[in-house]
Length: 329
Image (cartoon, rainbow, N blue to C red; front, side):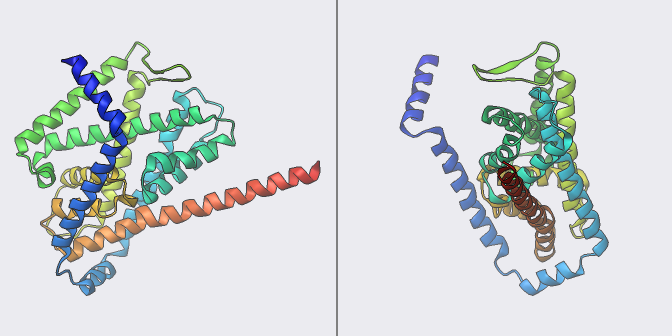
């Protein structure tokens, strides 16, 4: 049976390719999101949305902006941790911060962040002597940190508030709690697996030594802080009534973010918003939409503008330095 299954998988890969399956998933998610948005936004009063945006307390917006800044600051440690994991201790935190911030700010907005963020990372790290394989390893370790953090947040959050996930996946709360506990168990098994014996994955030139147990806990902590800051920013922009707990919002927010990430649409546009509208059904739609618009401005648009300005300024500086070197010769 195993041999026949493996042969079937190889035939599928040869005929269609697994990228085809991913593309189908992305299109499906965006199509479902379009239907959900149409149903939820039909009859929305744009004037009330604008009024809700204007009535948002400046203090709440400022605090949300602070949480966004903290989230992007945490993202820089994804790259720093990855650099130390692959043994590149010669690069400073400043280089890691530049690559981390700009790659995520660009990747979040353009979509397909594995490729767009990877391209930005390569442009920055290659000027410091890193090869394409080393950059790929950095992307892998940073991605592992991201997924470990998501698994921890969803596992802990859904175990505590399983009904929060029910609003999105429509599964009974007890099923969600079982799945969350299973996720936490898998995390524990993984941490135990890498705790002492060095674990290496890959072959030939592409080999990555996985972080050991204590460093895996550091990875999880980095991911949790990042997601908690993002959720806190969204929490500050929600209407005051009706009240929901932060854990409930965090579960819905992270689940919506992962759906947006899986769709590969720029900034999870449409998919993230549809999931939030479904998960936070108890809020007035105009006020909730106002909060989502402000969050997009703070978390996506503003960092993207900063990243483009930084990358543009860096390219200009590199070109001037290259020209000066030619003139000196």
